[in-house]
Length: 247
Image (cartoon, rainbow, N blue to C red; front, side, top):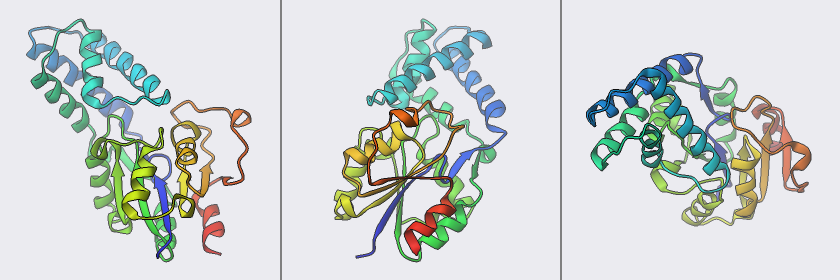
């Protein structure tokens, strides 16, 4: 059987491009105002911005507590923050608009990721795992397709599509069950302890490489507070991992 590597999408393979903050944020605030208008409410841009970020903080808090919510629920939080009573049709429309605000140039492949994937594919089947937030799996797929690396992956598993997450370990369990592999025989490459490596540990993944990402946008457990486990190795970048897995 071909050995398996699972790898996180964000901060391992992809990241937000420089254009993300200004272009996407502006479009998302406009989407919030449009949804409010559809419900008969006129909302200033400043109020839309505050509601959006308040909901984002709640979303992140629940996620890091191991109780993730979906984007429909996140949209509901936004309108609730504005004091607006919504309905299913508007919530679905707002969610789709928020997800679709991501422009084609809003994501980038991290330097070195493509060469790593091509080298690792010679020996391993590679599974992409992502706990998606507001950017859905279909948008990540569009980037992978446009950059020519989608075919490298054996499969791609996004939480918004499969309903399972890395943070609570269920995404790993579903992956190993569907691939009919023993979790202890899988290698996982993570970018974050709380949202990624910890879930892999709970699912019994055999070897975990945790990349050093001091500028990660999501708060993480300090290194000194993490458990010392023999199956977790810290590495500076993907290239350093090639030495471990190929030679």
